[in-house]
Image (cartoon, rainbow, N blue to C red; front, side):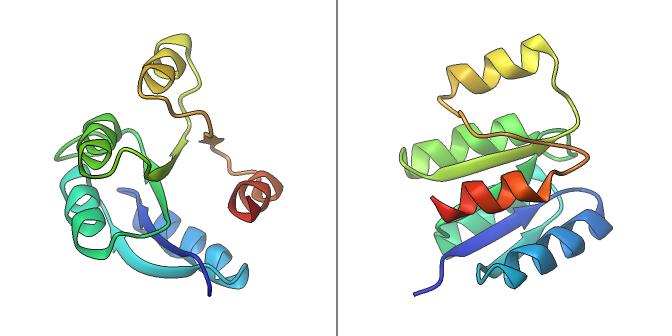
Amino acid sequence: MNKTAIVIDDDLDSVEIFSEILEDQNISVIGKGHNGREAIDLYSEKRPDLVFLDLNMPDGTGFHAIRKIIKINDSAKIIPVTANDDYLTLEKLKELKISDVIFKPVDMDKVINLISD
């Protein structure tokens, strides 16, 4: 059975391109969103195997969405996708026990390695 994923980013083109790449890797994208609120709602409704989300978005940041998703399922597989690789961002992710991060511009080899696990 194929893995399922939701993709959330406030950049509409990024969502579409990332979704196409995942589909090419036999990951079924079962939800797409554009802000933190939609990330939480989609996770609650769809319960995907993987969550890919941007950290800097309107209507609830990616950090807010991660906290809420973890409350729903503390073993959710969440992979942030961000251009921000500063110390504070990495520390916040570490506190949330998020170890896998994809930095923009996206390295598709890394994405493929992460979804192969």
